[in-house]
Image (cartoon, rainbow, N blue to C red; front, side, top):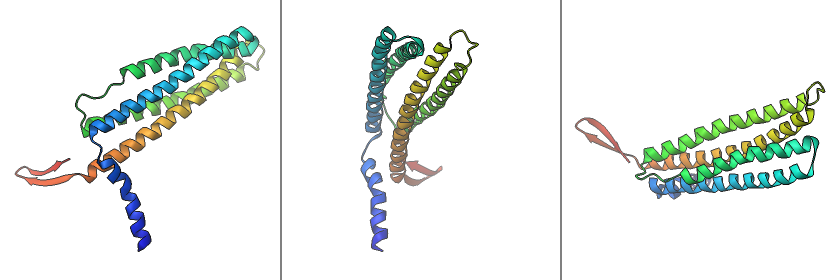
Length: 195
């Protein structure tokens, strides 16, 4: 009996803890977390751009193309990180529904991105395999670009999947806390549900 009571108490902690948060507070968390993630992506991008430029000046062959692709790829990543940081804004009037929808939109985007990340890795593996055929004009380019795609896809895959898990858990706990606060009231037109 004591064990059941103990487990019941610990199952209530997340609901009690998050039930105190308003939709505006959860939306603020969404914006703050997204901006932090864009800073991580921007830092990754700047590091890859710097190492890519240095690597292009110091290497030849497939290593040169590896650094070239990393640099070019991360110019795009830096643009995405910058836009994501500055265009992520809090909602003017956050409601339960609008916050839940914003988190769902983020989750959907991150799952799409994770699928694209797998496509990048697959394309990289294909390029590395093609580089083994000497019939191509520049097998070093195929190998360097392919290796870069594998690295970038792997980083972005882990990055996007981690973000998905974080946002999904927050949405789940937020919605559970909101449903625990539901009130059912009879009315002339039937049953009214209030948050």
